[in-house]
Length: 118
Image 1 (cartoon, rainbow, N blue to C red):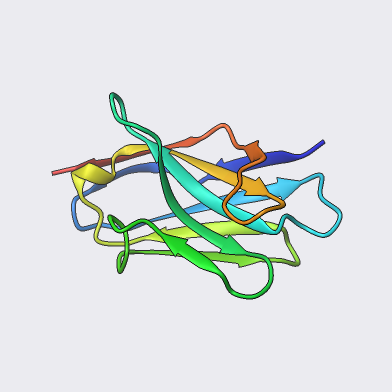
Image 2: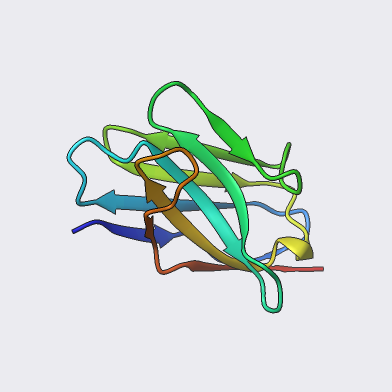
C-alpha cells in the first residue's frame, strides 16, 4: 500500500522560508513522478512543482518559479519543497503527490498547512 506523509508546514511572515518534506512508502523502486499541489480556500487546486525520478524533468508553476525548489532523494524515497520569499498568496494546504507517469498523480498525501502573514 502506497502512503505519502508530509511534514514541515507552519506559519511564517512574508519574505520568510519554509521547507516541506514528504516520505513515500509502498514502492519498490520509487515513483517516477513526485510533486506538490496546493489549494487555498475558495481557489482551484494548483500544481506547484514536479520532479522525475530519472532524467531530471522538472515542472514549476509560473507563480513559484525562482522562489520554490523541488528536490528528491531516490534512495530514501523522499521529496522536498524549499519555499523562499513567501508571500500571503502562498497560503494554502500543500499536498505531496506521486505517480508512475509524468505529472499524473496516482497517490496523494493528507496535506500540510502553510500560512504566510503580511
